[in-house]
Picture 1 (cartoon, rainbow, N blue to C red):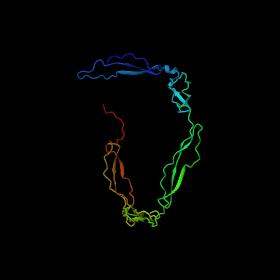
Picture 2: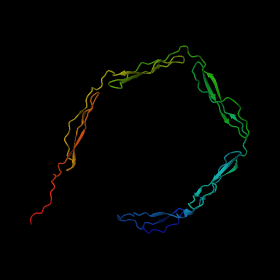
Picture 3: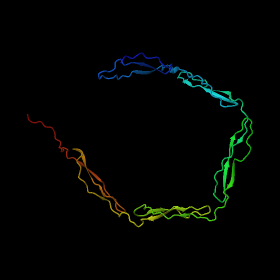
Picture 4: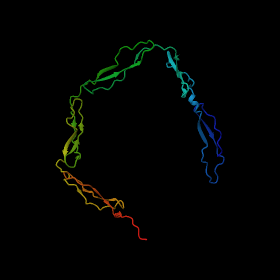
Length: 297
């Protein structure tokens, strides 16, 4: 790669960046290694100037559209902060928004009276026979403006009778279908619960009575079936002692396990499942203390 170029100009008077570049002079050939270095560097510049920089605002935007299509309204324009003030700089005091009066494009507004909408369609009847009710409504479609007349006081909802024909004289009561099969018991012993369901076979007509009774029936099951017989917890015998963990000053372990868990009113197991003991097989025997003595010349 070539040497670095000179640093370029700073892109901002305060807190900007500048770059320098280098380029590949010779590409690798014949299995040579590619250039590993980067070809551009960027660093900050004019950092000190930000300490004394004052706040700056940008240019005004174009005036926005008038807020009304007729009569008097208002329109706005705004500008943004371009740079915040540094620690020793001056803050911005200029306004960022302006508002002025405007006139709608169609000139003065026309006088409009209040208008009611048309009635909606009739809703469904509350009963199929024997006399029901249905309703419809309307709303204010146009509010008055520029001295227009207010809406006259009128009903917003209308209610009228419907399906006044008498119901049939032969009333039909509702009827249940047969009970379904009992479900499996919730427990295989002790006190369980089962249930069964039934559906409506015939619905009642207008003057008929609905079917009487519940659609779900519950019952106890497996009440007299005893659960597992009581059994005491039993432990296995102790296993062999493990090897000593150290040649000198170690420990050895042995363990046992629960052979049968307790059931019903049986007695629980007592005692530990693991034992440890010290082991010193590799320790040198202790010697009695003796003083140093010289031999004869």
